[in-house]
Length: 256
Image (cartoon, rainbow, N blue to C red; front, side):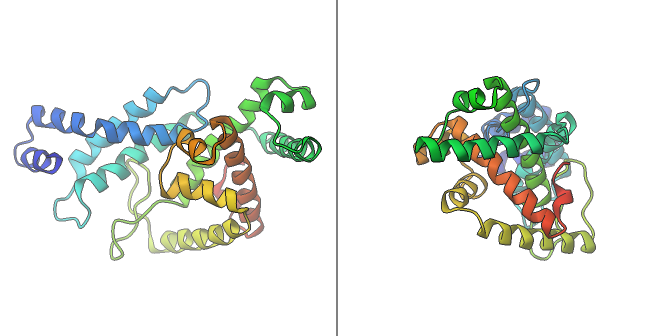
């Protein structure tokens, strides 16, 4: 039905048809927002991502080329996600000191896990560090949000076809050059090598999130751990990948 609506809209540019297409694709917009909302800063609401995603959908309606090998839904997905990433990039700021705090958190977490024989809770970590639970959660939140933007926009952006140049995830960005495409391929190769050094559970979390496109809550249900714990593990993974990529000369993709 969605494709039929789009073809009719393409011929007539009827406003009612446009609104019908938006309604038809709202579940897709909300699904993407749900995934990208991992670790949102406290001042950013998921509905703001949804609103930016609708803007991306409108851009897709105006820019889609029916002769393209990609279907409209595929094209719209990239535009929706790109608009949301642009919004996250605009509102996200990560202080340089964050990485030191995250490393401190990880060190204490490892020590407590060994001592307790289990993974400590955020409250236990906060007590050990003499931080508030909110401070612990904030460190994981900032790391997840900023690293997510970096990975999604620089390393996981797919191409529409093997013959066409890749497009950046920016909602309004131009097609990238062959040189940029080569650099992105090299980044992905470096990322693959870095991922190989992760534990099996860490690899599984990445696969469930980035490949299977599960939400944090769904990943928690699969692994039988809390959503907060999934967020903690993901933040730790991002730090490991950042440091390994930096060692290969590709760390500039992550905020510093």
